[in-house]
Image (cartoon, rainbow, N blue to C red; front, side, top):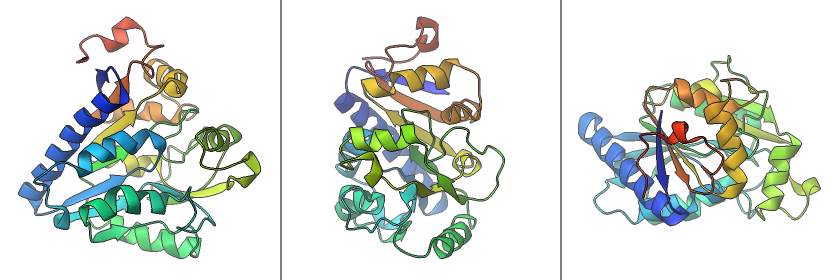
Length: 253
């Protein structure tokens, strides 16, 4: 695992976008297309703004998969992750081949269809975040580290749901759905390259636990340390609790 440290969210987003763009271009050059997983969260906004403004990416050769979505939430809802990707990635780039996890459609059918599609070939690069409770995608602790199913139904814990309220996506905890479709942990790890964008002070405790604690289902994103090509992008706020030796050798602004 590599750690990239920058002063703020904007710098972090620009640097992460440079790596993402290079990975997409390389995949298209080598394989004729790029299979990408997109994350939907407030932490991804600056990164996606920089990525979609990057020139010379053949977006018509990009196939987009969706990391997670609330069950029962229509794409018209302000908190819909489908809506997030449509507005902040798809509409800005013209990506045509997408596999969105529609929360308002029959869940089992959506999972079966998306599982079939993602099994056709490896994912080239996955964009992910890390939740305040250490979740990876919507795999809250204790996460299932064993299932080989690409997409699964998960129960959202209170800490995860409370984060959504704190970020302004829902007015109250009762409004946050309790179940979601999520890419499984093992499926995330099958990506050739993983890029985790994790800014902000609210993520500092989770970053400390995931990067310095044991690799455990109780800290789901800690499993990223077992992946051969993962880069974690932190700003000074999210890295605030890390020991100096954890950041030794990490490029910083």
